[in-house]
Image (tube, one colour):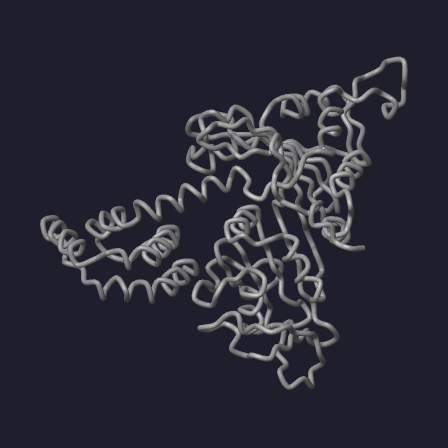
Amino acid sequence: MELDNKKLSLTPPTNRGVVMTNNCEELSEYMLFDWLQFTILPLGSHCIPRYLDDKFIGSNPENIRDFYFSDESSNHSIYINSFDFVRFLFFHLFRVTLDDILINVDSPQNGYEVCYSYRNIKIMQAPSRNDMGTHVLISGNACRVLEELNISYKDLFLKLLKFNCNYTRVDISFDVFHNRFFTMSKVESAIKNVEVVTKFRNSVQFTKDNLISKDNIGKTIWFGSRTSDIQFVFYDKKKERIYNANNIIDDKLKYWYRLECRFKNEKASNVIYNYLYNEDFNLYIKSILNNYLSFRNKKISDSRRSRWPLKSWWSEFLETTDKIQFQSKPIEYSITKKKNWLDRVASRSQLSVLLSSIEDFNIDIATSNYLYDYFKYSVDKINDKDMEIINEYRIKQGLNPVQYEDIKSYISDIKDIIIEKKQE
């Protein structure tokens, strides 16, 4: 089937899924990818990409040539569990170069031994177990990084077709910025009143509480067990963002609810296939929702709950699902935009203030990550006049002057510092 670029467009319609801007446009609802996880497995004993230019990451990244999988006798064979393959993947899939890749800053998972990462995009390997392949984990935050990097999901999935790729988890989320559809109280009430028709045996509810302020910081309702190939998760995204993002959220954002549709294993692969080739991907997702979950008004005269009428808020949501399109820059992306603005406009001043007061570089892991990003992209903005002002202030505070070479040396050593702190 020929790909329909119009159907796969991530540009939101004018009246739906609008990201809040300074004009305070009304938010409605949108869909987004919120988790991608897959394993590139060997073909036979090895999974070997062949390319014509072994120095594919260098002064001219465009030297990458097409590649194919061959057998172990290939003149350009590379074991799947090699750093060459990892850096190839980082650049080929995400346009991330070698200088930005960190090693074992994040702990490996699922039996893998080494974790390479770039801003929450993780690639894991087990050098002693080539049969485990190379595992790629793109969390919700990492999906936002892909959008910031202008990585097309369609292009990403098409590239992965060239590999022996096994999808293990894919999340499709619906973000709703009003209370006409599902809210936590509506879903909770339907469960309490036994007004849910579902193929799942149980629902699970979690409540988080801030033990200091005693405020409820959000409830999560799950349908489907953790081992199910399909799960539906409802939660109050606004509360979650306020708690986890230090209140970085627009005051005019009154509601923000999320429904996560989590697919695993074969179901995850089906989602990717339908995203690429289904002429109506929305209808595909809607059919899964219809098949696994519905909220209905109790009808005492009818003992079969499947014949009860749908609750109006759920019916309206399902009808709207046909019109909801993918959002290429979700609202969480606006936080990244604010950070980029700070980096561009205020980083020089903020870095100067930091350099004026920092006593040494024996810092914790979180600070190390933050400082690494800041130093890396801001140090070239510091000029001789800035250094003079910085050191004048440091001397007044009883601190030793700092040299420009010290800062450059810190940049080259920071990765090792981060890794050491992580392993302590």
